Image (tube, rainbow, N blue to C red; front, side):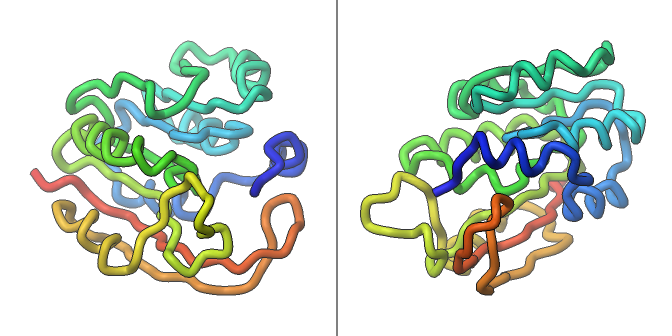
Length: 193
């Protein structure tokens, strides 16, 4: 499991996530964006630079508030706490990004958050992120995280227009350098109008 303090130290100056950058090609309005699990705020900085009128970030790591307070842009706001306690507004966001965050939700919290994300998207808005697959190394009997088969993931995305869906399974390392067997699904979808 991740060492979040080490993660923050290692990723503080990394570029925006590639899937988020790719999603910007499909944005029709740059009104509001939500970054779930915003971490070191590298994606938030990219969204602000892209001209979004409002960018909201959520994260529960203890390091997060101090980093968020360093962004002095009136278009930016943040919520310190778990995504499961966030009050998702209805049809508000043009983009919701959740880069390697949703799998860390407790199984019992996932359905509420997934529903909240969908309801918070404007018609035609973009949602991008990852879900962990059932063969991921962290999928153990004692885990509280969420994992899905390919079919379950496709079912979850079924109500969206799928722009990109890819299954990735490989041996690699985490952001802090520990080795791990990865199994995850990248998705980039649009809420149907």
